[in-house]
Image (cartoon, rainbow, N blue to C red; front, side, top):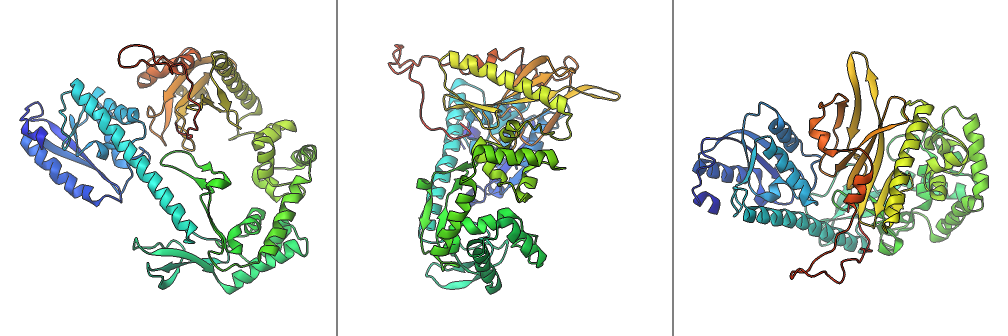
Length: 540
């Protein structure tokens, strides 16, 4: 190792922790090999390894799901940490974060606490020089790009296999079964639930399953198409007969709808309706991006019956105007004891909750159209209205200011997130100051686990739920995903978070401002004022 050969003595005599990580697809980076390399480096440098943090079989794309690294960061930030150096085999073992700033942020957290992160197998030094910093940044970008390229290749490969008729997924659904076949087409046998192939060259196909389930699927189509029985009544009928679904549970109308609308029951293999790349959000893909293979496996129902069911299912909601389905919703919320999307699906006189989301953007918008105010998590309606008004006011003020500056701003269906210039995703949330007995007033903050914004804006409200106290602007990587921070309102008690605190929304205007790009000779680029208009993924 070149670093070891440099014979630097700056690390001699220090206590160190080693962090090792292995993803399932790179056996050459096994944790044992990493430990051997780190032990050799430590012996040459005169370092004593006193602790080991190991994430075996964990992806390096995100911090989530890596308990060893989370524990390492907590121990490093503790006042009485037992080590002053963290030894890592190389930059990619620390992580293949898609944002190089996130990787640097976790390293900076350690360095600020007096713990130095050293990469044993890298060619650059650990002295913090400009050349070392530049090389480290390039290595981080290369590590992230490797994961992106690998993800793209895997997705394309899965689509190609789906187009050849091979099944790419888990349970195929009621009435169908997965069958394992060898690379030469030899059938090896059926795969039961939770079973997966163990040989990479093997493939999975789908065939009709239990004959009783196949007969029931055909009976469902007959009830729906020939006898005019709706999904709600079909589910009730099956439950009355004591027939369970594929998971051994009672049927619900949505599961019946899935059977009536899925092309796999006519032998068509459809893949990539939705996709999720790395740690980005799930997204719906346009039909042109789907991988399709007609006649991939024997059909359970014929195409004529399937098309008839599709026409009936489509016409049942398309023939109802917006005013009609809103009137039905209004009648429902006035008479129902519990109002939720699940209860809406159960009500025979109402379209499915998904229909309201498709017509009005989201179910909350439909509630607002009929004058219904839901109560979330037991919150008092007055508090909910006040916090919602403050949130909309903050988003409206920010959106107006950005639009006035020439930015393009798109608002999400649930009115909590904006996308600026198809690039920067900002999510807004309101946090109330809560009072506890024998404790100072506190507020809570948590990075959203169901979305991946670039910036999380927390608006704090006073005890009267009217006046905004301040704004906390957290960039991605500043909060550990999955952790709920309960913070005191006492001055100075939230010192690690004070750097993210601002008096108003104006900081967002600075963060979204564009600067002129200069070419290498210092002159202004002719394209410096061109706004990016390409399609960015949700985690841009």
